[in-house]
Image (cartoon, rainbow, N blue to C red; front, side, top):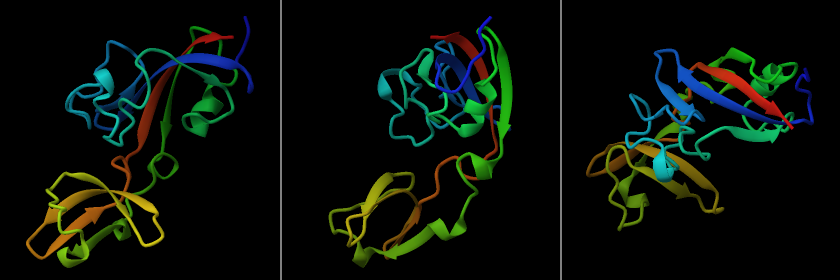
Amino acid sequence: MARAEKGNTVTINFTGTLDDGTIFDSTVEEIDCGEDGCCDDGCEDGACDDEGCGCGGHESGPMTFILGEEILFPQIDAAIVGMTPGEKKTIKIAAADAFGEFDKEKVFTVPRSELPEDLIPEVGDELSLSNEDDEELEVVVLEATEDQVTFDANHPLAGEDVTFEIELISIQ
């Protein structure tokens, strides 16, 4: 039976979980990565595209890609190399190698006077801020007072170790 090699087009199913068992992403159609996870509305109809957690970032159902192009994490590509169709593997990726460590320097406070007057941020809002060079920064509002707003620019899964259960479905 053929074994997966870099350059092969492969089709996989995967489920990504956190250490507490929360599912944050899955290609398995029966799994709703919204349960106890980042996506409260489930994964249907792109409901999670803006959640920043991966849920909804792809069509449901198996994922097909060229092995070695690091469409997911390089550790997943490395795990798939040598697998045969039907084989399953579980890999754990440390936070630093996944979505990064939580960086408290990415949490910052801005005086309301420096924000557009029509911006009325509420805790939990996901916003895209831009600086004078038009560079975009995705943030979440942590706190909003009359005088200032505190933002978090960390990835929502920063600081989390992640585990992926992978099944190689086919090699084309």
